Length: 143
Image 1 (cartoon, rainbow, N blue to C red):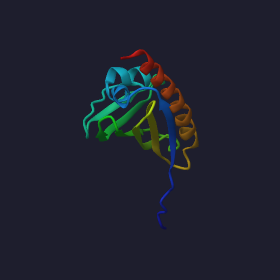
Image 2: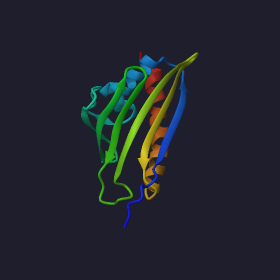
Image 3: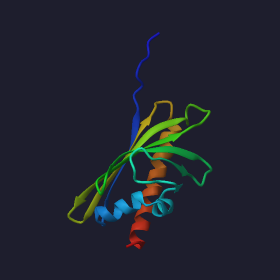
Image 4: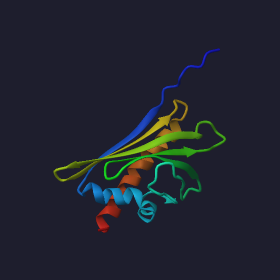
């Protein structure tokens, strides 16, 4: 029997946001701001730092910071342990910030969804739309 590498899918959300990269970076890396738009957390902007994201739905995501390039890129694991393989997720979330004339192009990619994880993929697709809407509200009311 041979192991065939399973192809994975990604959720990608891109937005043009009328704020400078530095302001968005703060919202992506300061725990009290992350909590406002994403989830409760114990995040630290340090490569190798392990942290949890705690969802209002009762789930806990196990994460580890993989890469940090201040005001440009942030990457961390986004793992959810579940007995049902369709929801047992090992993924990576990467934010990329690119300055534009009017603010910042923000790109988020969550990679690692297996073909048998259609519900998790659909949930992430919808979830990230809501997270980005929340993020834009936080950015609009913070300095």
